[in-house]
Image 1: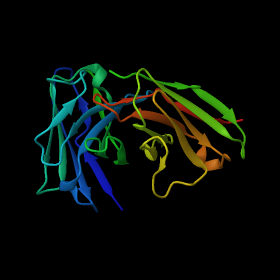
Image 2 (image 1 turned 90 degrees about the vertical axis):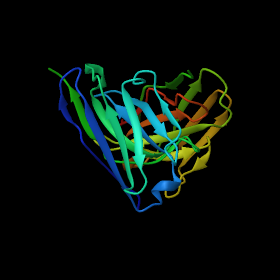
Image 3 (image 1 turned 45 degrees about the vertical axis):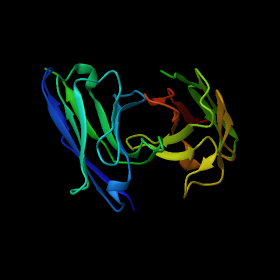
Image 4 (image 1 turned 30 degrees about the vertical axis):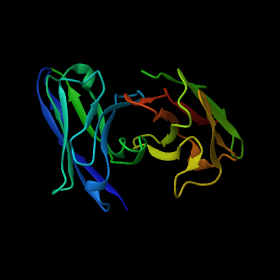
Length: 119
Length: 107
């Protein structure tokens, strides 16, 4: 069964940085686009970013463009999200998801990692 | 950006009931729509993609229909495990956008 395991969340001050990781297994990672989707406490789902299979093409929500960078290491079956200039409204559970590029629905989701931005 | 509007925001229903959730796109998206189920404290789960294609392993009591701007998710006979929040998502174009969610509660 597909496994997606996020890590790297935590408490960070406004203006700070965090790097999220998502370790993928039980599928051919390099064959699928990958994405990050977030959910603020008690709120709905918000797409954040997607990346193509080879990492060349990336997409971002306007709310994170210029601050967040998505990347992947196909040799390590790992997806990343570098988050800079963090703001309070970035506080959310961040989910790693399989899909979102060629087929723009999300087949499988990780369990999520909580990012809290607060002083 | 394509706005997705779900209705109702919540619905109370009994076991065995038929439940219908509606999702409207702010512009035509053909059949590029997915539906997800999310239970409290858990990740979302894909139910339907391409408006009406059932994801593998999802019970057949779930069905999706629609095209263009208007879509529906139907649960034919509500089961205890179906009490959850449901989200639609347009898969037509970036930025990818979700509806606000519909919470299905026990009556």
